[in-house]
Image: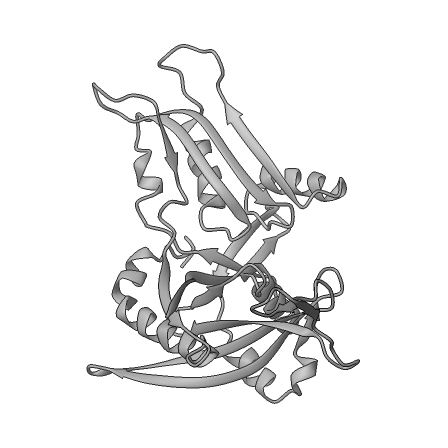
Amino acid sequence: MKKKTIRFEYFLLNEMLYDSVNNNVTPVAVNLDEVLTELQQMPIMTRKIDIINGEAIILVSISYKNRQRGQSRYNYWHLQFVRVRETMLPSIIDENGICREVVLRNNENLAEFTNVLYDNNNNVMLIQRSLEGVSPRYVSDFFSEFSNNQIQPIVILAPSDLQLFVDGSLIKRVSFSAASCINSTNPSVSQVAEASRGMGANYFDATLRLGMTARDSSMNLESVRGLLRSLLGNADVKKLNVSAKLPGEHSKVESYDLFEQRHDEKVPFSFSREHPITNNRIFMEMENKYFDSLGSTNLYIRRPENE
C-alpha cells in the first residue's frame, strides 16, 4: 500500500472586539454552538461564502457528536467544508501515458473537502490542512459572515515561547511575514497591513533590527514582547523569528523560530484503490488524536489575557 501524511492543526477561536475609545482590538473567546444550530436548519447551498477567483466555501455537513472517556463525556461538532473551484480542471492518465480531460456537466464543479473537529467546551478547532482545501482563514471568514462577528483563528503554540525572553535579554532583530488581511491588536502591524492591501499585496515581510551598535545594546524588551504577543498564534502570520542574546555569562546571539512549536498532528494513512482515504477515515483519526492529546492541548492553550 502507498502512504500519505495528512496534517491536522489546532486553533483557538476568538472574536475580535474593537475599542474605538482606546483604538485597540481585544480578543474574546467565542462559542459557535448557536450559530451551528442555526446553520443546521439552513439549506446546504445557503451555507456558502464566495472567496477568490470565482471560488466558494460551502459547509456541506454539520453533525453533533459525543464521546465517553473514563468518567467524562465530551460533546463536539464534526464539520465538513468544501472549497468549490471552476478552474484548474485535472486530467486523467492511464498506465500507457494517455491523458484525457475531466468533463463536468453544466451544474458541476470540483470540490476539495476539509474536515473540522470543533470542541465547543474548550473553544478549540482541529482543522485538516491541505493546499487545495479550506484554510483556517476561510473557516473564520465563514463564521464571521454567519455570526456577524469578527472571528479570528489563533494558532495554538507552546506556552514557553514568550518566556524565552526574560528580563536582561538583548533583542537584536525581529522579523515576520504575514498576510495583508491580518487582524492585529498591534496598531503598527495593522497600519503596515493596510498599506500592503492598498498596494494590492497579499503578503508582506517586516524586519526590525539594531544594525551596527554596541554589543550590549538591545531593542526595547517590553515593546518587543508586546509585538510578539500580538503576532504569536495569529493564523495570518506565516513566519516569526527573533535574534536575541539571553542572560548568561556564556550566552551568545541566537535565532529563535517562534513557530517551531505549532501544536499539530501529522498522521500517515495507508491507501490503495480498494482502501482509499475517505472523509470518515480522516475524521476518525482526528477524533483519536484530539482526545488522546486533550491534556497536552490544554497545556498549549494561551487564552486571551482578559479571561
